[in-house]
Length: 414
Image 1 (tube, one colour):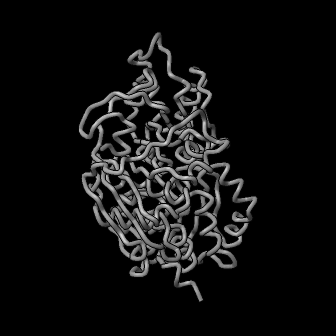
Image 2: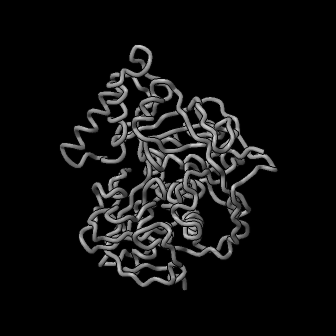
Image 3: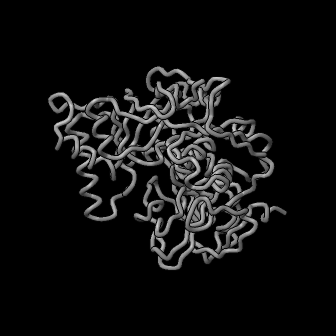
């Protein structure tokens, strides 16, 4: 019996299929190469482009850090104008691409979405099959509205029980990756089930799907429920149909976890699989980063603000807070969260991917250490090759910013 991936792709695991895609997303790093390929190969009918399916978002080098990034952004802007792409999100009007795709109603259950960015798998949290592709593949889909796929095998992850205080979706996915490794789901689809998943907010589910690719997965899918349907009400673009695996679906492997055994975790350099409990580390820090497509949503900011309220960032640490979108930024202002961050001594900026990829606005110097809510901690990921990045949830990042070292948030409780 078919899994969610097999149903959406209309094929059996291992088969090569050609499918109509619902949306193609490109950003300021990947979009220009995609448009260049489109024009060089004279793709499409008389050079036409499936503009209703294309979403273009400026987010990686926002705001532009130098002349090269400004030229890149201008080129993307010019392409969007030339082809009349209405789904174009300029600086100040969008945010981090994956957050925009979700909050603007492009992602929905049962949809097939590709993006020229590896963390496109985020939309699986809403029951979509979404996966990252290269700029060339994006160009082909922009021209034809279709793309070929190899239907992946599916692994099933079941997390039952009640999560402990300060344990979030980030800890669940770090726990999974720490168990199966960064190649544990290579070219597979992950499906997540269990009472712990059902009780998670949509934000935490997005974090889990976002990091599926860190285990090598093509997609990380969570069956949609009322939380998803409520979120999409008056938001989703067009019609959608939820897709669920059959009761007797055949999975390549099933993994089961007890939620009560999952603790606030940290992935040490230089791999997301290098996970340990935060309580076992005593690592001094130079920077604490809260944001990104992984953990920059309003729920993440609330968790961190609750811990930081009335406290101060350690004098040896600089803390950077980056809401994932303009809408999240605005809501954080309305709720008083930004004031809390500023009073604690944090630096707050508008949405950008800059620090996450080591581009700008948070780049690390040689020997510096950062605890970060981002998704990757490879060598040189956020700056110098001799810097270190420790991945953690927003609560751990906030507590660590206060203490000046990696800290389990429970240590701050009276």
